[in-house]
Image 1 (cartoon, rainbow, N blue to C red):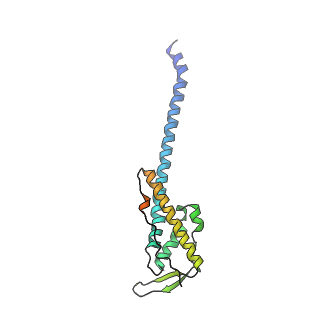
Image 2 (cartoon, one colour):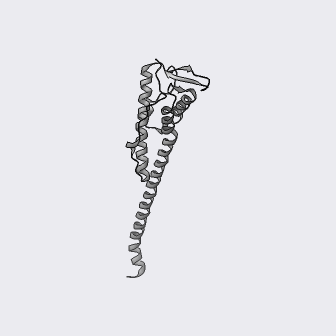
Image 3 (cartoon, rainbow, N blue to C red):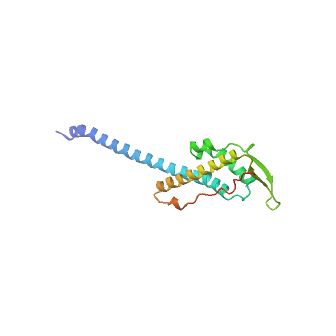
Amino acid sequence: MDILTILGQVGPLILATATAFMAYFTYLVVKEGRKQDNVRFLEKSLEEFYEPLINTLRNGPYYGIMDKDLSEVIRIFISKRYLCSAQLANILPYTVTDVFSGTPVSSIDKGTVYTFTKEEDFDKWRHAADKIWEEYLEKIEEYSKSVGTTIDISKFSKPSWASLKLKK
């Protein structure tokens, strides 16, 4: 047998093996790319949706939510809704029409404070805030696993949602 005959018989096997290796490495690159996309999406959802909402609803004045904060909450609800789960998106309010009543505050605060006028609306927002908190913890856990760290979420304490008040 000459060398050309041997190469003619072994060549397709070498070519098939090389193709299999290339396919496997392509699979690994795509898998890593998807993982990185997921990490970036988790970072974005934490930074642009969950954390701003939690901070605003947690740290509001004890007597209601300020108009500028309420505008920010509604802006996030509407423009960043794609960053949360479908289940949460279904329970988030779209507008504040007829949900809040504006109550003037002292000139020091220079703004309007909003409180809920109906207990059922207040309960819906509290439920939405609680769901935001639950998903926030889930996203933190998922993010920590994705980047290879461990975060003990049991040390996180659920906020009291100080800015959500019912007008009595």
